[in-house]
Image (cartoon, rainbow, N blue to C red; front, side):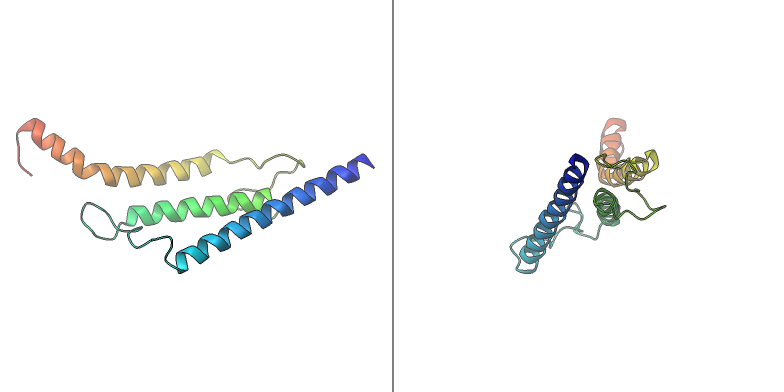
Length: 131
């Protein structure tokens, strides 16, 4: 009896989580399409006004891992995928070290691209050379 009630509570919680995330996604998409959330400069490098591949790869890797984690939490993880659903009920899925490595590498490459021009100017000033 107690186990059935606990399982029912777990299922209700899971579906409430899915509904809340779905409503939030629909609201965000609606606000983006009605221009209440401005995304015009999301992929533009502020320093030179050009497209930034570093921003794109950071955004894609972050969304990929986030969606994989959400699917794993709701029990719909893809076996052999980025993040698999936990085998124990009531336990969050384990994020592997290689997933953390992917996110860290993605962030590091973005930050490296952002800091390279500034670092170059700093080195030029310290050495007395012109760029």
